Amino acid sequence: MTAPELPAEERRPSRSSEAFFGRRHGKAIRPHQAAALAAGLSRYGIDLAKAAPAALAALFAAPVSSVRLEIGFGGGEHLLHEAKAAPSTGFIGVEPFVNGMAKLMTAVEREPLANLRVYDDDATRLLDWLPPASLDGIDLLYPDPWPKKRHWKRRFVGKANLDRFARVLKPGGRFCFASDIGSYVNWTLLACRAHGAFDWQAVSSRDWHEPYPGWPGTRYEAKAVREGRKPAYLTFLRR
Image (cartoon, rainbow, N blue to C red):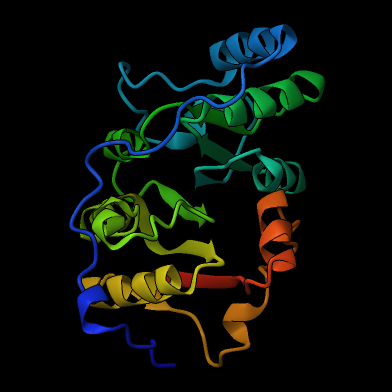
């Protein structure tokens, strides 16, 4: 299926995402959340000062046969759902926003997950730390669309980060992207087509408006639907 065209001024994908842009803090977290956050990061957090293991399965307390990365997991609804549904898969979640990480760590304090690890800083640093061809999948779900033209360079999808994805994904690994912002969906299609390392998996428009199998939904997505925005779910395979 052919990717839709953007206006000429939108046809230049972001060249890089070398610095973190966005909020790290929202509302003050409660004392029990702060305690869960500290304990959870001690247990689940990844320390980039240590060398990455040659096989990422070594990161996890449970035996895993594959590893997936979710960038910007928000409140953690999707990450928790997937980690519980696939205990033989290791999941790495990245979220620099303190409130989101605190919510996830509070959840796993109640129900620990041996197949989970997290990182609470800029995802590009983790991507650069990971070994080549070490991931089976990357999920980028409802990222900040940076809708103003002067901010497009801050969008996470761009050549520099697609280079990172291509380096760490195994051949045949999946990059899944979901958004309710049409211009960012088109931006991502064009960026992946221009990059050359990814094949878009769609035969018809219906394919990319159908949620992923087992998709649990998120609060943000529910809000977008209520406000009349139609989500798109893109899947790309690493060549």
